[in-house]
Image (cartoon, rainbow, N blue to C red; front, side, top):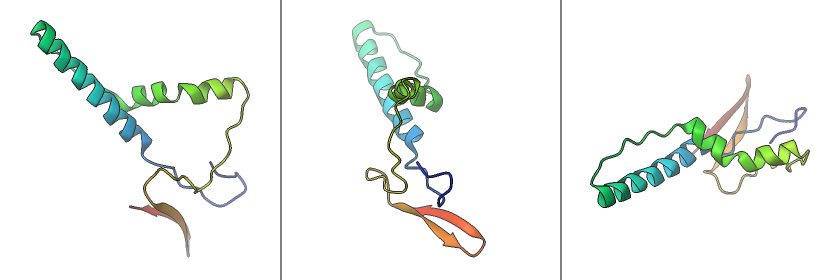
Length: 96
């Protein structure tokens, strides 16, 4: 998101946790449905990396097509409030 020559840029959000949780909830609902239909239990295993690969497929496609996404810097509007602060010895990111 940041400019290589510019100020430090924070990560927009802990998106892997969000997507991993959504995938786990969907998998749990599918397992409960299977139990109700077949009377069998299921084992649910969700990896954050797998969720990220699934969610990022659109970005990977755009990158393969040579389409650059606009840089948003620290202006990510759907994430928890956070920003980069200058310190005496560098920079730090703090957020809610």
